[in-house]
Length: 77
Image 1 (cartoon, rainbow, N blue to C red):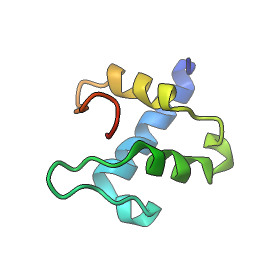
Image 2: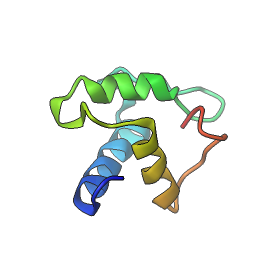
Image 3: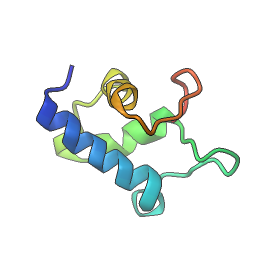
């Protein structure tokens, strides 16, 4: 489980990635619903040393704590 400081930082990064500039990070969003594949998101995060330890569970923690999330059962965000 992420500590609060790391969770807030990751949440802000995910917001930037998924809502504002996915193309800058090489993330492709689905046209129909704006989701992306978790493995694609993890690969991008793991390229950055600061986020190399992030797991799917960490991302799920961020999503579950957000009041602005959509989720189809954990396979895509």
